[in-house]
Length: 605
Image 1 (cartoon, one colour):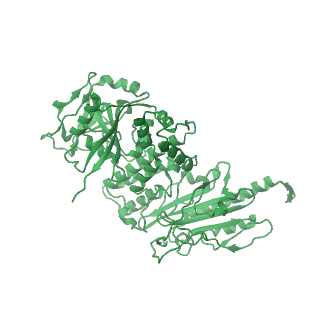
Image 2: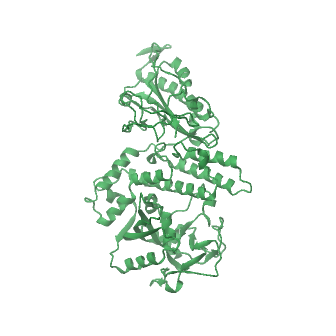
Image 3: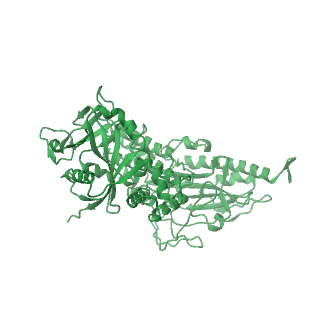
């Protein structure tokens, strides 16, 4: 025991005292980092992209941490004195996804001559790459560039529910800034010693108090807190995904069903597809996505939508809001000019809305894969049970298979000539409870079997929770006929929403029985179409071309399958090429079939 200020302190009491002091320092540091404007110390070219210093001595702690953004020393914290040591520079390259590799054992990075971007970071070509593994002890993963000798002896500090791990992002389109800042407070595994680590590089709120960081808003020229989900994700999820894909031969499932479940539960596929559309999964890993981050992304897009649809488009405001969006939903633009990526058209807005929708579905999928109650001996079967769906593979020579193939072939639009598709497998599907909810609309009349397509990343979420309507935070202008679930009677119109590519040719499609009832027919888009007139159950966006009604098939229970060959209707002069059907109540939907297809893209010239 030790006598301090006339009081007897145990080692545990001394540790709590130190943690309280560190807590106060981190609040000060976070406030400073989040409110420092662009052009300050955070962007100074001379500042090292990674800093690690040991803190000790309560009296000096605050003073040294206030200098965190630009110091050149490591300060070891000891009970008796403060000793200055040489700074440990983790690497000299920018710490962004494009050039943060190739750290040598000595901590220096081989590099060629470099140029500067507007963030003051070096552009570096790496001669060789060193594989960096994630180390997790406690709630948070230690930053990958912390030296191994520190990783083995320290963990991220946690006091109660507070985890002292801050990842921040700042995007300022006008200033060509797209950068991050990481701070971690580390505690020795033995207790009693603490370190503060920071790293920043390229990839606002008023003073953000640490306690209010989660509810903070984005402000121009300020860092934005990126909330992480500290559940058991990344490593464990990847491990489970690996076991899923490696156990096809051992599963209890029928082989075709097992192969399909493996396809839609592939986390590496989800990451690759998000990277292809610009998302930076290194700065905010898919496994750490939180629901609140996704809702913030929707909220910023909603405000961008309001500006775009206004009478006078304010370019400066669009730049600021675009920066807010990229701060909340990190993107990897490399060293391209940020002005090229301003969200200033309805088309760009829709693309970003689809990205956030995909991230929302991935967040659901990852939570599903994290479920520790699953049968780890048969992970594919465990995932199958979580979907609460029954899958029955259709045989190629069955009547249903033949009907669906005809429907697919006949309704591939003449304007969608860039690809053909091959059917991999068709399943008859039934979701738990869906038939009971659908029953109240079954007598409404006008039930049709219609197509619905979506990204491959989205299907684990769709099958586990059903088709859903966009949340209130989403901009209404991203939906031509209001927020609802959209269907088509033309296969290729829905197939385009699979967003397949040469890199990922697999696609998944649904055929749903939809209770349309009496439809509100519209020739042009109407964002308020979800406010249906009395007596109407759905909206039909009337296209100029549709399947020949006379060739439709009607089932014994009265469901219409519009599998006729398309024909142009001369009297229709609306804005749509093909029909769209929209319902605003998910109880009007019943999944009937799910298709796994491969896209074959034509090569031109």
